[in-house]
Amino acid sequence: MDKDVEIGIFGGTGIYDSGILENPQEITIDTPFGKPSDTITVGIFKGRKIAFLPRHGKKHAIPPHLINYKANIWAFKELGITRIIAPSAVGSLKEEIEPGHFALPTQFLDFTKSRSGSFSENGRVIHISVAEPFCPELQSTIIKITKEQNIKIHKDCTYVCIEGPRFSTKAESKFYRSTGADIIGMTLVPECQLAREAQMCYASISTVTDYDVWAEKPVTAKEVMETLSKNVDRIKKILTDLISQIPKTRNCSCSKALEDAEY
Image (cartoon, rainbow, N blue to C red; front, side):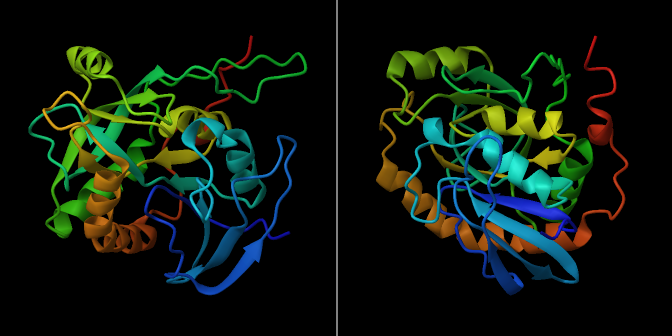
């Protein structure tokens, strides 16, 4: 198996197309935690080796609470990947963060219930720091590219992660708003913290699809997909520029996440 892949992309809801890759190959990987969401597409883009994995599966058959996050991260690690870009769909908890905009999560609030969020087992206990759970170097590159492309992106957002697959009740949505959080979704936790534990850089580009249910019109799955389809070309443009501009050498602390994580 090749272990020289640089960058991994987790395709989120509405982002299943790995067509930007040259000479694509489908790779099947088994992990100690079971199978990843689907086969992994590996190919070349502008001279860089990239892997693409749709986190919900290519047919969107895996709901967020049943995604094998540990297998997905482990499989990327097996390929040699050091950077992960994770597009995702989110609802907005603030009026000024409008459907159609992009958001850059820098913090999260974890309201999931049944997900395994660590590779720690067999007597090895790891306490990683997620004070800053997303890679600052990747985030800076995303901000630079969206500015160059004149694309509106809301920075420094706090992401509420809920269990799913259902949407929130109005009471829940109003509670999440009261925390001061900005956006809400179902997939970034434990994905981002597992990436940190694996000492991989991770950043998400979130597409705002709706106003959750605190607004007058409750969110629907149809509304989410309609907004995503309108934005798919813009997210592809962000990704293509991002891949080419990510620095070859990592200058962040993500690669040292385990240094002070054990007693």
